Length: 230
Image (cartoon, rainbow, N blue to C red; front, side):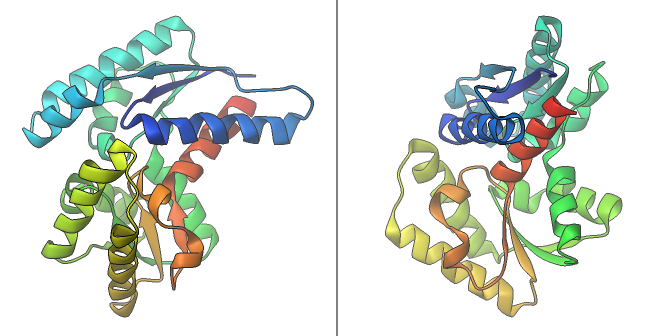
């Protein structure tokens, strides 16, 4: 079994899900008392969030790289950044490593293509929705087009993530608002929705939506588990 290095804590609520899913997948595949060999480095999200909103992505790239290198030195055979937003600096991190980085966009694209879908909606933080790194990789590497909500809806989703979900707060009013946004995106031709924030699956489930939802937390965690078992 390989060892996966997890960069978590962004937020720790979703990192809990990574740990659970990875271990459940390994147990399902191997049976018995098997569990995953992993090393988790959990950051102080307060510091990360402040750098994100200050636009200090170079500092964030340096932080993520230093953590990834520590995990590599500790014995990790591969790295997974447990956050969609922080994949904005994933290429900088990957270039510094001698081991693979399991990219959340690539893992998600595999599942989308398996369903034969081409036009997706993307929900996430304002950074994930508005910056080009996520949609560009989907389009250029995988041939998948992604649309995003209008400006007002983007701000609502961003606020729900940082002010509620990252603090473990789940409001039914926010769930209804998110479902409404998904319906609006479906009306614009979206064939499915990428839940491009690892906290959003805490809020909405497939039964809440009129089109398929792609839970990036689950998809990425299972990809990490498959790496461990490969």
